Length: 113
Length: 110
Image (cartoon, each protein chain N blue to C red):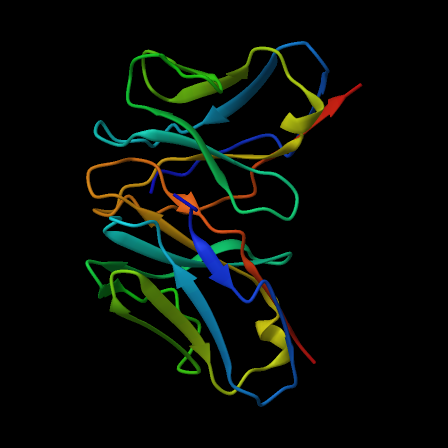
């Protein structure tokens, strides 16, 4: 398997623009997690899905952030409108039900100017 | 999640064993201990997990004290490629969602 795939790998955008980050989990995995990493706050869990259903979005910083999982092989994290403080590396991870380990993607480095 | 405490940094000579400690004194009886690492600019990578028995896989060994209040991750023959931030985590959520702390920056020296 190719592992967790994220796109784009790098995104530079201007404040106020909409940003969409994409994730393809490992085939057959039941759980999908979105994380954000910054120097100040470290790695934070934003939201996770089980069988395409959002279970816990308590880590989503504010209403500007939204996440969807329309099917088992695709998820998006959208920021609208983006702000400079959203600059971070965003990771997607997936896990098989009953397994212990999460598999992380390579991340998307977002820079909002 | 049980709170975990790790030293912020450690050095290890290449070829020697790296022993990374973690305190988790508030861990409950059914909470596993997980170890992940993050090599610079990459996504975190799962290493190993355990409940109360010592565990070993191709990457590392995990030694958990009998009272389960602390554990040690052992990389038996550290290489330069093992330089990374190592995270000790004790998740409690139903989805075993991970709460990352600051971790230990391990630097393997040539």
